[in-house]
Image 1 (cartoon, rainbow, N blue to C red):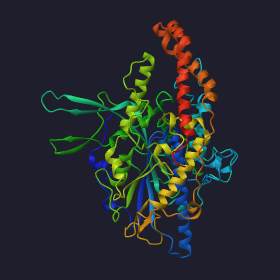
Image 2: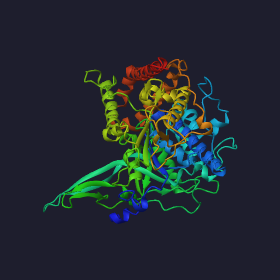
Image 3: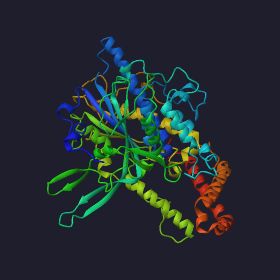
Image 4: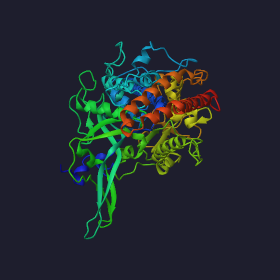
Length: 603
């Protein structure tokens, strides 16, 4: 298949910069969300998004009232969310946002000292962020045995049927609510969600195990090519929002597949919805632990990736296109795992969506009119060596190799997060185009302030109370971010109002970009630290043993018998392997629980 396009064709959707017809409208501030990888710490990101939606809705409701009553005290500038990019659990949060953004649902708030909320609470049932990350994603169903069947291959260490059920809930929201109630209905007033672009863009990272081929041709008579494969991939969708007409959709870039909605504003069934559903599962498919997913894209999608290299004969960078030697399947099918493996914080993708492919977002306080906001619950305050990293000591062969395999994976994840230029600008107080929301509880910051970060961020799956705490901390941190940090100087042309000021002595004469009104202005309560909710790993010992025993039996039949090693492995497993592996797993769980029990350094 011939792959288009000339660069001029691409520029129709991807301009060099945001000048001329692509400029930001007056009195408007645009922003994009970058949702970093999370594992179970997605509960924190979910809480941030829950409060952000509440704050924007409350402000726009107040703007409607003020306009009707000619009240000039309420800031009238506009904000627009143009794009969401997400990796791993952040991608899942982005998918929840996209599926539910046309509907109203109540925020879930901390009340008193509660460490969990009853399942019968209507807010819990209808709020897709809380229901998914706090109530649904739990270790119990992940250790069940229903997926291990004699006539089917083993696809993952954990049972992923719970995730399949979640994806069904996602694409049918709010029709999937049971019992059906008054919440989850389409927005009564499209103006309340006018802060959304008419067609919101969502890009979820995935690790493409097949890869996309590219090549460089070296000069000379030989005409030698240097072949490469790009495995860092995106699944891109455009979702209609309450302010857009149905079914007259805008014309998104061809690589963004439009998710159509029915008359109830629910995603319309069809091929694109199934791709969206599979993509939401793939972006968080932690290798080995969770099931890899089959995905497909149109070949033309890869013509908009902007893979670049320096062409010295032209004296400039040129845009690369895929170069399959034997043509390309249509659709292009591949197996995908966790997008955070290779791109844990898809920052540059969102930045280009705001600035243009070669543009730059204005950074100064007086000129800034668009920004990227990174939500990163697993941001680490220090970069010292972990005690779990192998240091070269000689131990039992199986143990040493297991450590090396785990360290190899963590090195890939760590390298994917090594972005000093992008993250460094967020620390510069004079830069107003890049922001970050990360956990903070008292004086404790970053991943040490949340309860779900232990055990490689899998610990949250073991306790609803841990997830509840992090959800509520996300709401509280988001409120503080909007109230005290996310602002511009009063003379900035995008806002230019003096009715409100940031509650921050370090930023005098600054106005909030998203002012707080209504329920969003009420102080978000601090959830008690979730100590004494888990007695230890003993409660999980039996289901872990059963799962490990079943996995061993399945792998032995599925893979090992072909090598004539069955008897030897049976002996090794019975004599010590099973016991050592079980003890090692339980030891790590207990260690992570003990760290939570110790509580944060400050409360």
